[in-house]
Amino acid sequence: MAWNEPNGNKDNDSWNKNGDQQGPPDLDEIIHNLKTKLNKFFGNKNGGGPSFLEQGPSSRGLVLLALIAIAGWVGSGIYIVKPAERGVVLRFGKYTTTVDSGPHWHIPYPIEKVELIDVAQIRSYEIGYRSTGRGQSGSPVPSESLMLTQDENIVDVRIAVQYRIKDAAHYLFNVRHADINLRQVLESALREVVGKNTMDFVLTEGRSETMIQTQTLAQEVLDQYKAGMLVTSVNMQDAQPPEQVQEAFADAIKAREDEQRLRNEAEAYANDIIPKARGAAFRKIREAEAYKSQVIAHAQGETAKFSQILEEYLVAPEITEKRLYLEAMESVMKGSRKVLVDVPGSTNVFYLPLGNNESEESNKTRRTISLDQLPAIIRGKNMNQQDHSLQDNNSRNRRTR
Image (cartoon, rainbow, N blue to C red; front, top):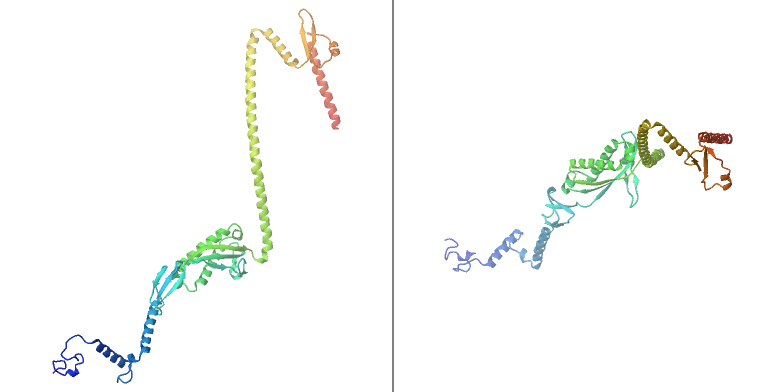
């Protein structure tokens, strides 16, 4: 008979201790069986002595501590990424993913860990010198600053570089010793740019262009390496010849400045005098054109007048000659204070004193002249004027001697 058949070996039926009563197994009995198995597992196979779960409150505390430790381990996987950071998740040291800002969870250590990288921070690096404090230029590093130019001169160039991380995973894993690689890339780019230009260009007008070319070239190399760094600015702190030749170079710079100053002064003078000369020339040209027009108009008028007189002369020659003679006398004598009156039937000409500045005595001594004597008098007057002019010239010559 089987042990679990009705009325068969009821004492050995561990799952039906209540006899014929059928139903689910008792909870206390299940707990008892579980205790027995745990005691066997922890070495109390004979059942002697207190079992692991019957040792009292201390055993329960250990279980509770174990549960708390497990909960703490699980909770250690919670982390928060700041807005300026990126989280790089590693699983057994291998890159898994990159997470943005906000709360996240990862499998706790030692399975996974997270590297938080600040991608917004602006970092600085120095080539050719090392700063010693705020506002101080720092000590030079000749091995980095001395460079050869295209015209085989040596210059001392010092630059300050600012950069930031643009890809956290590339920054961590693609290059070893990122800072050292950055220094080497920047120094190499600067030497290449300086070597393609002359000394005067690097030290004077080419400073800004040299820095732009250096930044562009360095960024291209970093992108080829996938270094995960972005060069934001390259600033020249100092550029000068070596200390041994600085005095001679200063003299050359001063001479160049003097040349530029004199050139500027000459250009300023030219800008001032040339417009004036152009204005004067334009004015002279306008005056000459006006005089030309005036002379031409006068000549044309005289020509027309002569043509009219010629027509009249051909009609009445004597009358025309007389009129021309009188007009000539009028033009000659119009500035004189003497008035000549021709009296009909007489050979004398009366003199009328009309001058305002002549006295009565001088007027009384005036003599009358004949109309026939008028041409001789006019000729004599002209000769007297010539004699006076000759005497004036002789007196001037004596003074000059």
